[in-house]
Image (tube, rainbow, N blue to C red; front, side, top):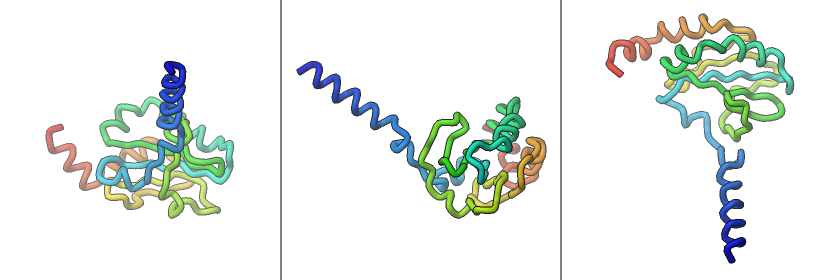
Length: 141
């Protein structure tokens, strides 16, 4: 009986932590985060790899501005930790001829849509000019 209970517990944990359990909608981040979507038509994208390398060293700046990013290729969607996830709502941003970066503001609207490669400074500077960001800088955290 103890082995069956252990088996059920392990099986339950598997389902809880499977990628399917990680289903989210892009709109879940509205008013919480600024979302960067790295979208490519190629499954094994060097552009995405280069773009992520540009983001390295920007952790503090991204965190301060509530920036998170997701990767979307024909193989699927991934978090910044490169773990597969079921991210719904990407259909409206995925166009078969677009490869590049899309920045969504906290209001969910597109603030920037550029082909790869986009300098981190461009993204940070743009965000810093936004009224919501100006307000965030004035209010104590």
